[in-house]
Image (cartoon, rainbow, N blue to C red; front, side, top):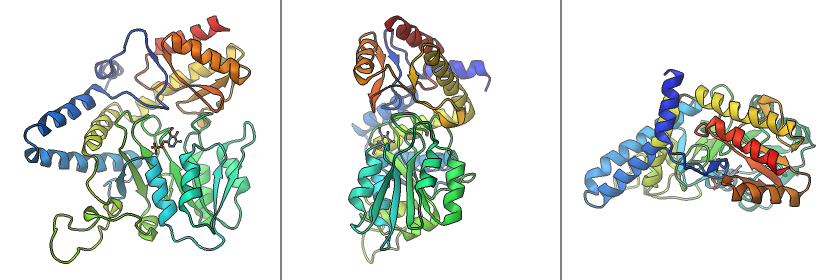
Length: 382
Ligand SMILES: Cc1ncc(COP(=O)(O)O)c(C=O)c1O
Protein backbone atom coordinates (compact mmCIF):
# COMPACT_ATOMS: atom_id res chain seq x y z
CA UNK A 1 0.00 0.00 0.00
CA UNK A 2 1.39 3.45 -0.87
CA UNK A 3 1.79 5.93 1.93
CA UNK A 4 -0.95 8.06 0.35
CA UNK A 5 -3.32 5.06 0.43
CA UNK A 6 -2.39 4.45 4.08
CA UNK A 7 -3.20 8.06 4.98
CA UNK A 8 -6.53 7.83 3.15
CA UNK A 9 -7.41 4.60 4.93
CA UNK A 10 -6.61 6.10 8.34
CA UNK A 11 -8.70 9.20 7.53
CA UNK A 12 -11.61 6.99 6.46
CA UNK A 13 -11.46 4.81 9.56
CA UNK A 14 -11.21 7.50 12.26
CA UNK A 15 -13.35 10.57 12.74
CA UNK A 16 -11.50 13.50 14.30
CA UNK A 17 -13.81 15.50 16.49
CA UNK A 18 -13.11 19.26 16.25
CA UNK A 19 -11.93 20.65 19.58
CA UNK A 20 -10.60 17.28 20.82
CA UNK A 21 -6.92 16.32 20.86
CA UNK A 22 -6.94 12.64 21.80
CA UNK A 23 -3.73 11.61 23.59
CA UNK A 24 -5.04 8.87 25.86
CA UNK A 25 -4.64 5.57 24.01
CA UNK A 26 -2.80 4.15 27.02
CA UNK A 27 -6.17 4.38 28.81
CA UNK A 28 -8.70 3.54 26.10
CA UNK A 29 -8.57 3.60 22.31
CA UNK A 30 -11.21 4.64 19.76
CA UNK A 31 -12.74 1.99 17.51
CA UNK A 32 -12.13 2.15 13.76
CA UNK A 33 -15.22 2.69 11.61
CA UNK A 34 -15.22 -0.94 10.42
CA UNK A 35 -15.36 -2.14 14.04
CA UNK A 36 -18.36 0.07 14.76
CA UNK A 37 -19.99 -1.29 11.60
CA UNK A 38 -19.38 -4.98 12.40
CA UNK A 39 -20.69 -4.60 15.95
CA UNK A 40 -23.74 -2.69 14.64
CA UNK A 41 -24.44 -5.51 12.16
CA UNK A 42 -24.13 -8.07 14.93
CA UNK A 43 -26.53 -6.10 17.14
CA UNK A 44 -29.05 -5.61 14.34
CA UNK A 45 -28.91 -9.28 13.34
CA UNK A 46 -29.41 -10.28 16.97
CA UNK A 47 -32.68 -8.41 17.01
CA UNK A 48 -34.14 -10.86 14.49
CA UNK A 49 -32.07 -13.75 13.14
CA UNK A 50 -30.08 -14.87 16.15
CA UNK A 51 -29.28 -18.51 15.32
CA UNK A 52 -29.02 -17.80 11.59
CA UNK A 53 -26.10 -15.47 12.31
CA UNK A 54 -24.37 -17.83 14.65
CA UNK A 55 -22.07 -19.28 11.99
CA UNK A 56 -20.83 -15.77 11.11
CA UNK A 57 -19.91 -15.14 14.74
CA UNK A 58 -18.16 -18.50 14.94
CA UNK A 59 -16.21 -17.68 11.76
CA UNK A 60 -15.17 -14.33 13.28
CA UNK A 61 -13.84 -16.20 16.33
CA UNK A 62 -11.74 -18.50 14.11
CA UNK A 63 -10.40 -15.51 12.16
CA UNK A 64 -9.56 -13.74 15.40
CA UNK A 65 -7.48 -16.67 16.66
CA UNK A 66 -5.70 -16.78 13.30
CA UNK A 67 -4.99 -13.03 13.30
CA UNK A 68 -3.72 -13.05 16.89
CA UNK A 69 -1.45 -15.97 16.02
CA UNK A 70 -0.10 -14.11 12.96
CA UNK A 71 0.50 -10.91 14.90
CA UNK A 72 2.36 -12.77 17.65
CA UNK A 73 4.38 -15.05 15.37
CA UNK A 74 2.46 -18.12 16.57
CA UNK A 75 0.97 -18.84 13.14
CA UNK A 76 -2.11 -21.02 13.56
CA UNK A 77 -3.43 -19.31 16.68
CA UNK A 78 -3.79 -22.64 18.51
CA UNK A 79 -1.84 -21.36 21.52
CA UNK A 80 -4.31 -18.51 22.08
CA UNK A 81 -6.98 -18.62 24.79
CA UNK A 82 -9.61 -15.90 24.55
CA UNK A 83 -10.11 -14.14 27.88
CA UNK A 84 -11.93 -11.13 29.33
CA UNK A 85 -8.84 -9.04 29.97
CA UNK A 86 -5.17 -8.94 30.95
CA UNK A 87 -5.87 -9.53 34.63
CA UNK A 88 -7.73 -12.75 33.88
CA UNK A 89 -4.81 -14.08 31.82
CA UNK A 90 -2.24 -13.26 34.51
CA UNK A 91 -4.44 -14.66 37.28
CA UNK A 92 -4.89 -17.96 35.39
CA UNK A 93 -1.13 -18.47 35.57
CA UNK A 94 -0.76 -17.32 39.16
CA UNK A 95 -3.56 -19.63 40.33
CA UNK A 96 -2.95 -22.56 38.00
CA UNK A 97 0.81 -23.14 38.13
CA UNK A 98 2.13 -26.07 40.21
CA UNK A 99 4.20 -23.91 42.53
CA UNK A 100 7.03 -25.45 44.58
CA UNK A 101 8.00 -24.61 48.11
CA UNK A 102 10.59 -21.80 47.99
CA UNK A 103 9.46 -20.41 44.61
CA UNK A 104 9.71 -16.65 44.21
CA UNK A 105 8.01 -14.32 41.72
CA UNK A 106 9.87 -11.19 40.61
CA UNK A 107 8.20 -7.91 39.55
CA UNK A 108 9.00 -4.21 39.32
CA UNK A 109 7.43 -2.17 42.11
CA UNK A 110 6.16 0.32 39.49
CA UNK A 111 4.05 -2.29 37.64
CA UNK A 112 0.36 -1.64 37.00
CA UNK A 113 -1.68 -2.94 39.93
CA UNK A 114 -3.08 -6.03 38.14
CA UNK A 115 0.42 -7.30 37.65
CA UNK A 116 0.95 -7.06 41.40
CA UNK A 117 -2.45 -8.15 42.71
CA UNK A 118 -2.69 -11.39 40.78
CA UNK A 119 0.68 -12.67 42.05
CA UNK A 120 -0.06 -11.47 45.55
CA UNK A 121 -3.60 -12.86 45.71
CA UNK A 122 -3.66 -15.93 43.47
CA UNK A 123 -0.41 -17.72 44.31
CA UNK A 124 -0.24 -19.95 47.42
CA UNK A 125 1.01 -18.36 50.65
CA UNK A 126 4.36 -20.15 50.43
CA UNK A 127 5.28 -18.30 47.21
CA UNK A 128 7.19 -15.06 47.87
CA UNK A 129 6.63 -12.05 45.62
CA UNK A 130 9.67 -9.77 45.28
CA UNK A 131 9.08 -6.23 44.05
CA UNK A 132 12.21 -4.50 42.87
CA UNK A 133 12.52 -0.73 42.62
CA UNK A 134 14.15 0.38 39.37
CA UNK A 135 16.79 3.10 39.72
CA UNK A 136 16.13 6.31 37.74
CA UNK A 137 17.16 5.72 34.14
CA UNK A 138 17.91 2.05 34.70
CA UNK A 139 16.62 -0.18 31.87
CA UNK A 140 13.74 -2.42 32.94
CA UNK A 141 15.48 -5.69 32.07
CA UNK A 142 18.61 -4.70 33.99
CA UNK A 143 16.65 -4.01 37.18
CA UNK A 144 14.97 -7.42 36.94
CA UNK A 145 18.13 -9.35 36.06
CA UNK A 146 20.02 -7.69 38.91
CA UNK A 147 17.31 -8.70 41.40
CA UNK A 148 16.74 -12.29 40.18
CA UNK A 149 18.03 -15.08 42.41
CA UNK A 150 18.31 -18.86 42.36
CA UNK A 151 14.76 -19.26 43.69
CA UNK A 152 13.18 -16.92 41.12
CA UNK A 153 10.69 -19.16 39.31
CA UNK A 154 8.84 -16.53 37.33
CA UNK A 155 9.30 -12.94 36.18
CA UNK A 156 6.19 -10.96 35.24
CA UNK A 157 6.66 -7.67 33.45
CA UNK A 158 4.83 -5.24 31.17
CA UNK A 159 6.27 -4.55 27.74
CA UNK A 160 5.77 -0.84 28.51
CA UNK A 161 5.38 0.64 32.00
CA UNK A 162 1.98 2.32 32.20
CA UNK A 163 3.17 5.45 34.06
CA UNK A 164 6.70 6.20 32.85
CA UNK A 165 6.40 4.68 29.36
CA UNK A 166 9.70 2.78 29.84
CA UNK A 167 9.78 -0.07 27.32
CA UNK A 168 11.30 -3.43 28.07
CA UNK A 169 14.19 -4.75 25.96
CA UNK A 170 12.44 -8.08 25.61
CA UNK A 171 15.27 -9.86 23.76
CA UNK A 172 17.61 -9.36 26.68
CA UNK A 173 15.18 -10.63 29.29
CA UNK A 174 13.96 -13.51 27.14
CA UNK A 175 17.53 -14.73 26.65
CA UNK A 176 18.31 -14.43 30.36
CA UNK A 177 15.16 -16.31 31.41
CA UNK A 178 15.59 -19.07 28.80
CA UNK A 179 19.15 -19.72 29.96
CA UNK A 180 18.06 -20.05 33.59
CA UNK A 181 14.73 -21.80 33.13
CA UNK A 182 12.82 -18.83 34.62
CA UNK A 183 9.24 -18.49 33.38
CA UNK A 184 8.71 -15.16 31.60
CA UNK A 185 5.18 -13.72 31.67
CA UNK A 186 4.48 -10.60 29.62
CA UNK A 187 1.67 -8.07 30.06
CA UNK A 188 1.43 -6.60 26.55
CA UNK A 189 -1.55 -4.25 26.89
CA UNK A 190 0.59 -1.10 26.73
CA UNK A 191 2.28 -2.04 23.45
CA UNK A 192 0.34 -4.51 21.32
CA UNK A 193 -1.42 -2.81 18.44
CA UNK A 194 1.27 -0.13 18.43
CA UNK A 195 4.55 -2.06 18.58
CA UNK A 196 5.16 -5.65 17.45
CA UNK A 197 5.81 -8.59 19.74
CA UNK A 198 6.99 -11.81 18.13
CA UNK A 199 7.23 -14.94 20.26
CA UNK A 200 9.00 -16.85 17.49
CA UNK A 201 11.92 -14.38 17.49
CA UNK A 202 11.81 -13.75 21.18
CA UNK A 203 10.48 -16.70 23.18
CA UNK A 204 8.33 -16.04 26.25
CA UNK A 205 6.14 -18.37 28.28
CA UNK A 206 3.03 -16.23 28.29
CA UNK A 207 1.54 -13.03 26.88
CA UNK A 208 -1.58 -11.58 28.52
CA UNK A 209 -3.39 -8.69 26.87
CA UNK A 210 -6.68 -6.81 26.73
CA UNK A 211 -7.93 -5.05 23.62
CA UNK A 212 -9.37 -1.68 24.65
CA UNK A 213 -6.15 0.35 24.49
CA UNK A 214 -3.65 0.20 21.61
CA UNK A 215 -5.57 -2.60 19.89
CA UNK A 216 -8.43 -0.09 19.44
CA UNK A 217 -11.23 -2.43 20.34
CA UNK A 218 -13.84 -3.39 22.90
CA UNK A 219 -13.54 -3.66 26.65
CA UNK A 220 -14.03 -7.14 28.07
CA UNK A 221 -12.17 -9.16 25.46
CA UNK A 222 -8.53 -10.14 25.58
CA UNK A 223 -6.28 -13.13 25.13
CA UNK A 224 -3.64 -15.24 26.77
CA UNK A 225 -0.88 -16.79 24.68
CA UNK A 226 0.88 -19.70 26.38
CA UNK A 227 3.91 -21.69 25.30
CA UNK A 228 2.91 -25.32 24.82
CA UNK A 229 4.89 -26.41 27.89
CA UNK A 230 3.28 -23.81 30.18
CA UNK A 231 -0.21 -24.61 28.87
CA UNK A 232 0.33 -28.31 29.59
CA UNK A 233 1.60 -27.49 33.09
CA UNK A 234 -1.32 -25.23 34.08
CA UNK A 235 -4.14 -26.64 36.17
CA UNK A 236 -7.46 -25.15 35.01
CA UNK A 237 -8.93 -22.79 37.56
CA UNK A 238 -12.33 -22.65 35.86
CA UNK A 239 -14.21 -25.30 33.92
CA UNK A 240 -17.10 -25.45 31.45
CA UNK A 241 -18.53 -27.02 28.34
CA UNK A 242 -16.31 -25.25 25.84
CA UNK A 243 -12.89 -26.40 26.98
CA UNK A 244 -13.07 -29.92 25.56
CA UNK A 245 -12.19 -31.50 22.20
CA UNK A 246 -15.87 -31.86 21.21
CA UNK A 247 -17.71 -28.94 22.83
CA UNK A 248 -20.96 -29.55 20.95
CA UNK A 249 -21.32 -33.11 22.17
CA UNK A 250 -23.44 -32.18 25.16
CA UNK A 251 -24.67 -35.66 26.20
CA UNK A 252 -22.86 -38.84 27.19
CA UNK A 253 -19.37 -39.20 28.60
CA UNK A 254 -17.29 -36.02 28.86
CA UNK A 255 -14.88 -35.62 25.95
CA UNK A 256 -11.14 -35.06 26.39
CA UNK A 257 -9.84 -31.57 27.27
CA UNK A 258 -9.11 -29.49 24.15
CA UNK A 259 -5.52 -29.85 23.05
CA UNK A 260 -5.00 -26.14 22.42
CA UNK A 261 -5.68 -22.71 23.92
CA UNK A 262 -9.39 -23.50 24.12
CA UNK A 263 -8.57 -25.76 27.08
CA UNK A 264 -8.70 -22.62 29.28
CA UNK A 265 -11.96 -21.20 27.90
CA UNK A 266 -14.68 -22.31 30.28
CA UNK A 267 -17.98 -21.23 28.74
CA UNK A 268 -19.65 -18.99 26.15
CA UNK A 269 -17.29 -16.29 24.92
CA UNK A 270 -17.77 -12.54 24.51
CA UNK A 271 -19.10 -12.53 20.94
CA UNK A 272 -19.48 -8.75 20.70
CA UNK A 273 -15.89 -8.31 21.84
CA UNK A 274 -14.62 -11.00 19.49
CA UNK A 275 -16.31 -9.44 16.46
CA UNK A 276 -14.94 -6.02 17.47
CA UNK A 277 -11.37 -7.21 18.02
CA UNK A 278 -11.32 -9.20 14.80
CA UNK A 279 -12.39 -6.12 12.85
CA UNK A 280 -9.84 -3.84 14.56
CA UNK A 281 -7.04 -6.35 13.93
CA UNK A 282 -7.98 -6.57 10.26
CA UNK A 283 -7.17 -2.85 9.97
CA UNK A 284 -3.90 -3.26 11.89
CA UNK A 285 -2.85 -6.01 9.51
CA UNK A 286 -3.99 -4.09 6.45
CA UNK A 287 -1.89 -1.07 7.41
CA UNK A 288 1.02 -3.23 8.51
CA UNK A 289 2.89 -3.33 11.82
CA UNK A 290 5.82 -1.37 10.35
CA UNK A 291 3.61 1.52 9.23
CA UNK A 292 1.86 1.71 12.58
CA UNK A 293 5.15 1.69 14.47
CA UNK A 294 6.71 4.29 12.15
CA UNK A 295 3.82 6.74 12.61
CA UNK A 296 3.76 6.36 16.39
CA UNK A 297 7.54 6.70 16.62
CA UNK A 298 7.26 9.94 14.63
CA UNK A 299 4.78 11.31 17.19
CA UNK A 300 6.67 10.19 20.29
CA UNK A 301 10.04 11.38 18.99
CA UNK A 302 8.51 14.78 18.20
CA UNK A 303 6.97 14.94 21.68
CA UNK A 304 10.17 13.86 23.46
CA UNK A 305 12.23 16.44 21.56
CA UNK A 306 9.64 19.21 22.03
CA UNK A 307 9.19 18.59 25.76
CA UNK A 308 12.95 18.47 26.30
CA UNK A 309 13.33 21.79 24.42
CA UNK A 310 10.73 23.27 26.76
CA UNK A 311 12.99 22.27 29.67
CA UNK A 312 10.44 19.83 31.10
CA UNK A 313 11.44 16.88 33.25
CA UNK A 314 10.83 14.04 30.79
CA UNK A 315 10.77 10.63 32.49
CA UNK A 316 10.30 8.41 29.43
CA UNK A 317 13.69 7.09 28.28
CA UNK A 318 15.11 8.91 25.22
CA UNK A 319 16.61 5.69 23.81
CA UNK A 320 14.25 4.64 20.97
CA UNK A 321 14.52 0.99 22.04
CA UNK A 322 13.25 1.94 25.50
CA UNK A 323 10.18 3.95 24.64
CA UNK A 324 7.00 3.13 22.76
CA UNK A 325 3.70 5.03 22.59
CA UNK A 326 3.71 6.67 26.04
CA UNK A 327 5.51 9.93 26.83
CA UNK A 328 5.50 10.98 30.49
CA UNK A 329 6.84 14.10 32.12
CA UNK A 330 6.62 16.26 35.20
CA UNK A 331 6.17 20.02 35.50
CA UNK A 332 8.23 20.15 38.67
CA UNK A 333 6.00 18.80 41.38
CA UNK A 334 2.72 16.90 41.44
CA UNK A 335 0.56 19.97 41.98
CA UNK A 336 2.11 21.81 39.00
CA UNK A 337 1.68 18.68 36.91
CA UNK A 338 -1.99 18.34 37.94
CA UNK A 339 -2.61 21.99 37.23
CA UNK A 340 -1.13 21.62 33.70
CA UNK A 341 -3.31 18.54 33.25
CA UNK A 342 -6.42 20.50 34.22
CA UNK A 343 -5.56 23.33 31.82
CA UNK A 344 -4.90 20.93 28.93
CA UNK A 345 -8.14 19.07 29.68
CA UNK A 346 -10.12 22.32 29.68
CA UNK A 347 -8.66 23.11 26.25
CA UNK A 348 -9.81 19.73 24.87
CA UNK A 349 -6.66 17.65 25.25
CA UNK A 350 -7.53 14.17 26.47
CA UNK A 351 -4.54 12.89 28.45
CA UNK A 352 -3.87 11.41 31.91
CA UNK A 353 -1.87 11.75 35.11
CA UNK A 354 -0.30 8.45 36.22
CA UNK A 355 2.30 8.02 38.95
CA UNK A 356 2.42 11.83 39.39
CA UNK A 357 3.41 12.31 35.73
CA UNK A 358 1.51 13.84 32.86
CA UNK A 359 1.04 11.07 30.30
CA UNK A 360 0.53 11.64 26.57
CA UNK A 361 -0.16 8.59 24.40
CA UNK A 362 -0.76 9.25 20.68
CA UNK A 363 -1.59 6.45 18.22
CA UNK A 364 -1.29 6.14 14.44
CA UNK A 365 -4.73 7.76 14.11
CA UNK A 366 -3.44 10.92 15.84
CA UNK A 367 -2.82 13.69 13.26
CA UNK A 368 0.79 14.96 13.32
CA UNK A 369 -0.62 18.51 13.62
CA UNK A 370 -2.18 17.54 16.97
CA UNK A 371 1.28 16.77 18.36
CA UNK A 372 2.45 20.27 17.45
CA UNK A 373 -0.76 21.80 18.81
CA UNK A 374 -0.26 20.15 22.20
CA UNK A 375 3.38 21.26 22.33
CA UNK A 376 2.22 24.82 21.54
CA UNK A 377 -0.40 24.67 24.30
CA UNK A 378 2.30 23.57 26.76
CA UNK A 379 4.57 26.40 25.62
CA UNK A 380 1.78 28.92 26.36
CA UNK A 381 1.13 27.35 29.70
CA UNK A 382 4.71 27.58 31.02
C1 LIG B 1 0.21 -2.49 32.20
C2 LIG B 1 -1.28 -2.69 32.32
N1 LIG B 1 -1.79 -3.93 32.48
C3 LIG B 1 -3.10 -4.15 32.56
C4 LIG B 1 -4.01 -3.10 32.48
C5 LIG B 1 -5.49 -3.35 32.49
O1 LIG B 1 -5.79 -4.65 32.80
P1 LIG B 1 -7.14 -5.33 32.29
O2 LIG B 1 -6.95 -5.66 30.82
O3 LIG B 1 -7.23 -6.54 33.13
O4 LIG B 1 -8.24 -4.38 32.54
C6 LIG B 1 -3.53 -1.80 32.35
C7 LIG B 1 -4.50 -0.67 32.33
O5 LIG B 1 -4.22 0.44 32.52
C8 LIG B 1 -2.15 -1.59 32.24
O6 LIG B 1 -1.65 -0.36 32.07
